[in-house]
Image (tube, rainbow, N blue to C red; front, side, top):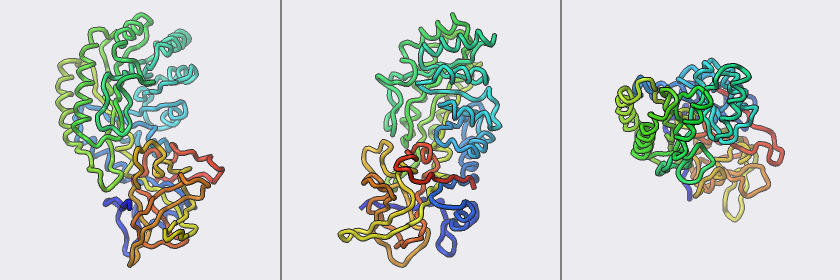
Length: 406
């Protein structure tokens, strides 16, 4: 049996309903209009961002990775809480530009930027994290047309992996960034082409709950940059050390010790004041800032018994929340924390399935839950990041899922 539990920070009212933004979940659902839906708690997002900002050294910037959750209203909120936004497509760029963030504090990374995307980024005045020599050629042409040098940094394919990372983004052959041994060559080409060099983007991996692994990766990234300073076309302005901060998805997960990471960033910031006084250090986070502030809510439409196993069929599924179904890269499928939006005297073991005609449409496998009937709400926690936008919403042509920032 795979255990499932609600996250401790979500409280229930006297009627046993979960509370979000000070209201009973059923009331919020009525205001949103329907299930299935994603609900993001703006107060939780603000609290997490401000608490982390308070622990970071003042000189270390905090950036939000829009890919974690690109909902426009949420990005607008994040723009007021962080020092920069990082995007990975022209669509995300449009959302970022529509927020209150200064375009000078927006950066663009991604291994397959089209010519049009690069031209758009340059026209908007944002920082482009170069991931190929072709991108230099496109930006040189764009710079010639505008008479203004494009702002660039180098995204590095690091010569090591982020240990214990849920998704590794560096080390060995990768489509991301420039291999570390070719960075000096790219620096020379940037100088020769007259682009406006600003720094480095070093992203080793994501969803890591081991502080020592993140500390080691950030320190090694810093040391790598020191070896390139003499080749830089101009003094570096920004060293983006990436992210990797994970959140617990199962009761077996131990929350990340953020204090150990911020302490080490303080040491690196002190070194940077001596080693590269013109540069700011930055970390780029998405999941850690918004993941625990979101829930996915679906309604039970049928209760079925098959060979003594209870199946709760809900109106949402893997087409809305691919990660919860285990089909977004889990090596071993584990249930997200989830619960029924009421408390019953007895518990039962039940599986939560969506309406799709595939056995992959499984949101919870044999979880211990309160007894649910048709009409009850199922709540999946830890759903604020990589939910709606990372799911195949057109699969089998079921209705799309709603989102609300509450």
